[in-house]
Each structure stands twice: as C-alpha cells, then as structure tokens.
Length: 363
Image (cartoon, rainbow, N blue to C red; front, side):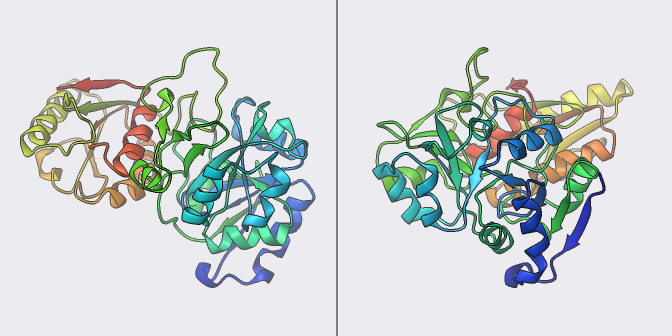
C-alpha cells in the first residue's frame, strides 16, 4: 500500500478542501492518521467492523484492546450510547472539546470490533481543529488509537507516524507537532462512581472538583492481572516502550503526590548516574532521561533532557519524542529520573512506568 502524506498549511485555520479526500477515505473504510491535541491518531470509521480490523492489523494491536470513538460535537454522542449518565453530562460541559475520553454503556449501533468485545464504548471530542473538522466532514465517528505500532512510544509528530505507518495506511495528515503530548484522560462513567482508567491532562484534581467522588483503577498503579479484559486503551499491555530496556529511579516516598524535596531529587540523580556509569564502563550504549535542572550531573552517555522539572507540561510534551530519539540513537539501556504524581505528573509517571514494564529502582 502506498501511503499519501498531505500537509496542512495552517492547522489553526484548516480549510475543508484540505480534508475532503481524507474524509472520503474514512467513509469508504480506509485509514487516515491525523493530529489531535494529545497525540496523532490512526482513524477509521468507528461504525465499520472491517475498519476496526484494519486498525488492529496496522498497529499489530491485540483485538481485546478497545478503540476510542471520536466525535465532532456533543450531538454525535447520543447514537453511540445506551444512555447518558449524569456524570458524563457534567464532564462534557466542563471539559469538551478537549483531552477527555469517557466510557459509556454502548448502543447496538457500535460494533464489538470497535469496543474490544465490551458492552461499553469510549468516546472523545477533540479540540484540535484538524481532528474536529475531519470528523465532521467524514460524517461518522472516527475510531482513532494512537498512530504507532502497538507498544511503541506514541507519535507526537507526523514524522513519528511515517516511521511506523508508511505502507500500512492510506494517508497521513501532517498538522505539525501536537500540543499536550500524552494521551487523553479516560474516565469510566458507566457505573455508580466514576473511575479513572488512564490519567492525562484532565487531572484527578480537576475531575474531583467537577464531580466530587472519583476513584482510580488499580491498573494505573501497577500491572493488570492476567486474564482481565481491559476497559480502555493502554491498561493491559506494555505500552509506550522504547526498544532499549528502560529503568525508572525514584525516591521512596510515602505520599507520591507530594513534591520531591531537593535532597530527594539530588539522591535520585546520583543513583541514576551511578547505575548509568556502571553500564557505560561496561561498554553499554546508555541513554539517560534527565531534566533541564539536572543535565550537568551526567557527563557521559546519551543524555536527553525531557523538560524542566518545574514545568510538568514541558515534560509531558517531550516524553514520547525523547523515547523515540533513543531508538534512533540505538541506546541499549535507558535510566530515567522520576517525577511527583501530583496533577499532570500522574500521567507522566503512568506512561514512564508502563514504558519501563514497571522496572523501578527506589532509593
């Protein structure tokens, strides 16, 4: 298959004629990768079971891993869901369009191929102008997991998509780099108490301010048990991983939502360097993930700053790009600093922990 790549001249003021061919590809059952405010998505008609199969095949993704149906306006949700829970209405009003996915009881219109065999459907309304207009022009909800081969770091530029999807899909829409850099927050509103299934830019603090009681699925805090069917993308399988073995180093903190003290940060940095130096001296090609503040502490190795420790937004934005760069530079092992789990830090640590396969050294 030949993959066509088109370039959007002004992603903030996208013109319909730039997206008409992509919309037609979606309608006829093809696949198009496109930018969203979170990461690039791999889109197909969410109501077409064959399109869902194509998405799974292109990604090499297990078919029990549900897809997210993307809509362009709240009115497009009703045909996809059996009913609208009150918590869902409140979250839609507060955070849509934006980086929030909700799990609803599905209607009969949504095929099980899209939901991974579940009786629930994940729905999101992106705020990115390219994504939102493409969905509207297609006239169907678009199922769109991240546009990478399964398990790899998610794509935050069209070049990342090209590396993984060239020859596998019909088209890539290049709308420039994304804004946030980590996938949407996922909240299950199908039960009595809303449950966060994946942290993201809509933080736990923001959700509780809107809804009151919100719980966290155990899969966010550690590996999911074998035999359990995931209710949302990214819960069960190893995700976001570079090719090299990644080890996280973190302070032993009773309250992970508390800010790290300067002493804890310095102790963590010294341990990252100790572990990295041992491998470097053994002739191993070592990658080190640090921050702007700690960069000078690592005189050797493939050292990349992920952003400023005081700016969670910069860390989230750069995360997947740094992991992919280590692949390009053929790092054999990677050691990474950790981050506090308050606000956006919960999403950052969720992605890093899964990328490391929960290989964590606590100091």
